Amino acid sequence: MADFDLHIKGGTVVDGTRVPRYRADVWIKDGKIGQVGGRAPGFAKKTIDADGMIVAPGFVDLHTHYDAQIRWDPYCTISGWHGVTSVVLGNCGFGFVPVKPEFRERSMLTMTRTEAIPYESMKAGMKWDWETIPQYLDSLDRAPKGVNAIQYLPTSSLLTYVMGLEAAKTRAATEDERAEMRRLLAEGMDAGLGGFSVQRLGPDSTQADFDGSPMVTDTMCDEDILNLARVLRERDEGFIQITQATGHIKEDLAFLERLAAEANRPILHNAIAPARRNPQVHQRSLAWLKRCREKGLPIFGQTATLRTGFAFTLEHWNLYDASPAWRTVTTGSNAEKISKMKDPALREAIKREHDQANRKLEAIQAGVGGPIRDLIVTWAAGKPELEKYVGKSVGLIAAEENKHEIDAMLDLSIAGDLKVEFLGPNRGFNAEFYAEMINDSPYTIPGVSDGGAHTKFFTGGAYTTDFLGWLVRDEQRITLEEAHYRLSALPAHAAGFRDRGVIREGLAADVVVYDLDRLGVEPDWVGDIAHDFPGGEWRRVQHARGYRAIIVNGEMTWDDGRCTGATPGKLLRGGRG
Image 1 (cartoon, one colour):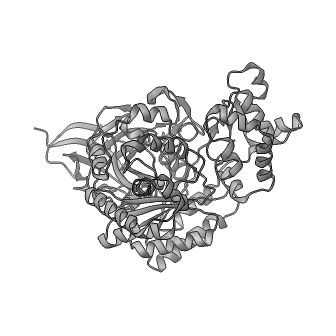
Image 2 (cartoon, one colour; image 1 turned 180 degrees about the horizontal axis):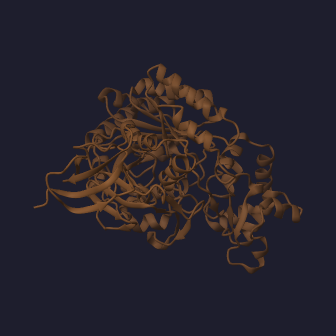
């Protein structure tokens, strides 16, 4: 009989604790780290030659939307290709629990719009066998998984379940409704929830609902959120993920501080992102985090350490939703969208908002491809008469045709049946600022991958590989030890993972083995199109290069880039596997 299941031989261990790297063998048995260093008393069933490679804890991705995809893709790719061994589901208040049977269809339509997950894939790939939170967790537990998962209670689903959709969008909860929501959250925590999540972006939400109205939580009152926070405080467990940006930054941050004080549990604030030239943008956020900690408020900042592009069509685009006029013309069927795009009054409304330089919309556009004038036409929807536009910017087309850039974009989209593709060019990233977000604060976590969302125009799930290859290896601005602490140990701690996040004897064997020199994202920027979703749907993907092995609970899920078919992932109820 073999004494161990796996022997990782001759690698350089970076264990996630910030301890300086060291050369050592690692042995794995029964899903746990059996021994690190020294001489093992026996032999293993399988040996992985890790000479010249890094051996580190698997990555923990706290911000994903794989709630639907995990039902047909056990590995939660893109993230699963890039060394992520644990994901947190149900972010931003969105998800599928609790959901009454008659609301399942509307629930999927919501996710089609707000997180741009293909409806046909959800329809074909999700087998609903739950209504309540405990039933959902049992279903997720039964599902084959190639990664571990922790589940938030999505607050939007909770409010809708208790109050009904119309009421949840138009008024605060009654005291009886608040009591029922507390009861359901407590019931869910008993069953293994990790906490709850909420997005509050105000009436002009950046991510609107299927009908163009704000999401349920976008206009949620303070007391309805604090009502749930008190459940976590009373139990002294769980954590809260919140994305709050109503356009009133001082009030938003003040509420986060009040929420942290009320819950007395970790708050994951989303998100801190740097500008390209102005360091004060991220430095103000880091200074605020420091002040919160000095007050004893347990707030962590999730940072947008992503270098990925946006290539999109107006058929599926939803990230201009902060603009009421854009939201109007990009809501509905394709025929309805085209009709509205032809409407002179609606065009004038878009141009008016555009020309008035709405600061919120400008900031959003900067993060999702850049200004409209700079977008490049990359595909002409298979129409020969439109090929002359490929490679040109919207601004150049507008100048050549003596049009407003909004007219140029809309006219081209209509001519291509909404399938003309626009690309945000790579304008470069400030490595110094990205590194400062990590090095200058003990309370920041890289990521905000949005894995599983915006699948036709975003590939943030590759952030782990890019983070190591860019900021650690190429720029040498973050140490390897610091990087693995931030990618594994700190997010595991912040999210209540009890038994993983570092390489330590007796803990769960979630491990990545990789060649730092070869590590890379393929292809870069916007990725490839893959027709690998149920219902005949497609998505954009970026594969990983350089990973020798990805190990989840002691079993290899990826062997030199090849999927082994093993599904050893677990639902981590209460953070435990």
